[in-house]
Image (cartoon, rainbow, N blue to C red; front, top):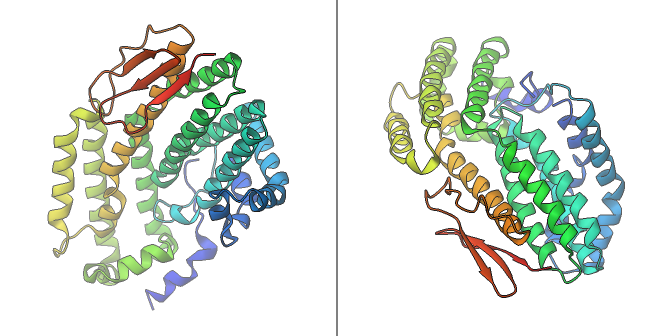
Length: 361
């Protein structure tokens, strides 16, 4: 009976949380479209005819999202009614679909020699990423990271286009400068996640597990014998899980005093500590679900920061400003390398697969 209750959670997946007044109307625009079979796959192909069909079908939706993001700049409201941390994976797909549409629109604009139309696509995608980053949800913050890194690829296509002009470099420089200067520091990201986790456990006490965990998580939990103890000792086990979550979260937040490349030993200790508790009689099942993505998420956020900085530094150098070219890479601890070559500027760092290249204009 207890497990069957999980099946009814679809209609109850949105619980009071930190941040959604802006996000929810945006999400609704692509809630149905992202479920259409093969649509995102089509956007990743070279089938111009089919891509045009998708862009035509979603044009009004795309423009509505842009209007919502414009409103968000002047009507700052606290978001609400976001999903719980263990439900967010069912919430974020429409945002990725919208960005896939913007990227396809930008690529199509370049094919039509309209580079002016690419800048707004990058701007609006980053506005959405900023909204998602305000959430305490690790899933939504991760989606924001993927969006930012995807739009770096779009920016590279723009600066390589033969019709790209210096003014486009200046516009891009302003966009990436804003992303860097207004970046949410890691300690704040994890402090928000800790608060999201506290709310999650508080809601379990009020609403029960069946309203706080997604069907996908249900299948995972049902395969864990320890989880069935929650049927018998729900209140006690949840209290213990919360204590573990809060204790580990404090260590995570403290680790943010150091750049990512200096946190490795702390993160390894945390991962090993959680791993040792798995399969034991006192396994903090829900705490582990909330904490197991901390290390990979930290690395991903450091990669995001590096990806944005590499673009910013390359554009700065191309515009004649190299006063920040000695920045230390947050991910590796090494300096970025600016190369002034015959026909442009290239910025890279050790281990980076794709340096950012800006031709002279």
